Length: 427
Image (cartoon, rainbow, N blue to C red; front, top):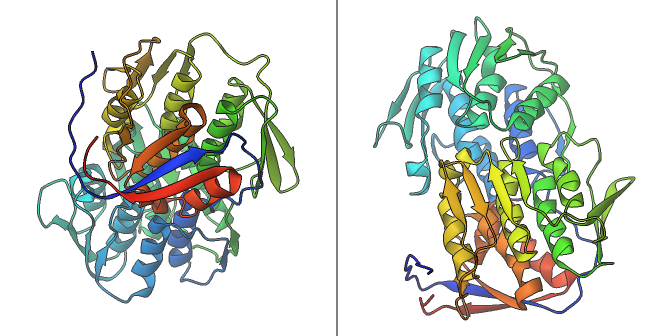
């Protein structure tokens, strides 16, 4: 039997209706992960760089505004990356700062990063609840040194500290404990810091960075492989022979989520690389039909995409390495279970870090409305379900502006009809 948490919110709803054929050339957004790192590295280089193809998403815009507004009170709204990166950056910059965000942001933990910064010489105080934003930061030159950090919570804490490490008097040695999650994002930070002239040593669970000076570097931001994952999903759910072209993606990308191409090959989607673009092609033969088992410890942002795709393709799955999903824009483990029930899929959560679907079904809700929980990836992972169900209703659809502002327009280009209405609060 299915049980649902009743949510009564009157707000805008989009209904995505599939035309029956997916096609087109889709211009993806620039990577916000690269964009936000580039903005911090540019600031550490005295804003002397030219950053091309910068993301136009909400998270990057709030970062830009923090640097250009001239204000000491900074509201980063729901931008988790901006909160972590700016907290570290402001801690080493002379001045007095207050950084805050949305109500959800005020409930996303930041204690590990704040304690690490304070041990390195920073002066950061909590203005409301201990361990959470908003923060008061008295910026100054940091001493640096050796610290121990839990690597199993958020790679963004690690990247935030790494980027400011060259400015510390003693540099920084990070000794990471536990299982390090999202390693590709740490590698991205190292690669980009190298482009800006900084040498980093990463040996096992230890990262060491000597005091150094950033060299300005004109940076070109890649398009977003995480955004591409939703088009892989759409192609996988479409009939054989379907293809979509995605410009601005590269086989040798610095983004960890570029691994989506190999994972979706298991689900029948071939990736054909050419200069400056990829073509996705649905070739069902040889696709996985047995239980899909995978550890998303390095690609947690892909988990929602694969949960929805596998269930709709009737492929049982056992996904691990999802512990960081509890502290994202929402508790993504709970949100996935709740919303997949509405579509008739009973998903189990194990150890606060795994999701399992053993093909158990229940009666789907008629005219179900998918809640997004202020989470952009919930909206984008569920919208492609219309290819199988004919249509799907998404509440608070504009959360996609957090990382992919043109998502709904791109769906219309590719073969969807998008209808907007004011929802009456019913499920």
